Image 1 (tube, rainbow, N blue to C red):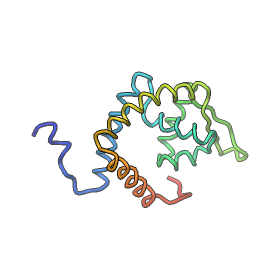
Image 2: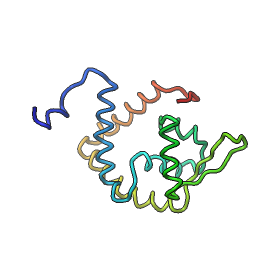
Image 3: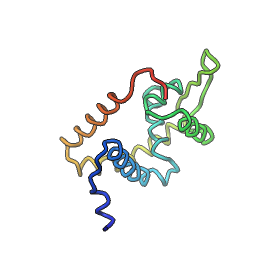
Length: 151
C-alpha cells in the first residue's frame, strides 16, 4: 500500500478519525513553529493567556481540554523558558498563569508562522468547509465536555 493511501483509509470510529486529523494538522503547524522552539500546545497556551490575561491553571486546562499532568508538564517548560509566569491564588492550591513580556513577543513572531499554516489549510478547504470545520469541532467539544468538570 502506498503511503498516500494510508491517509485516505476511512476509519469506522469518530474518535480515531478526529485524532488522526488532529495529529496530521498538528504536524503542519509544528513544522512552522519548530524554528522558534515552540510546540503547538505551547502556542495554544500563549494564545489563551493573551486573551484571558491571567487564568487559573485548572480553567486553562478545561479551555484546552488538556489533562492536568500534560498541562503541568507543559507549563513547567514554559515557566523555565520565561514565556509565562505564575502566582498563587487566595487558596494555596490555586495557580494563576499569565503571559510574560517574553511570551508576548514570542506569540507575535509565532503568530506569523501559525498564520501561514492556517491559511494553507483554509485555502485547501475553501471558505464554507473551513467554517464547517470550526462549527463541527466546537460542537463535538461541547457535546463531549461539561462545564466545570475536571479532567
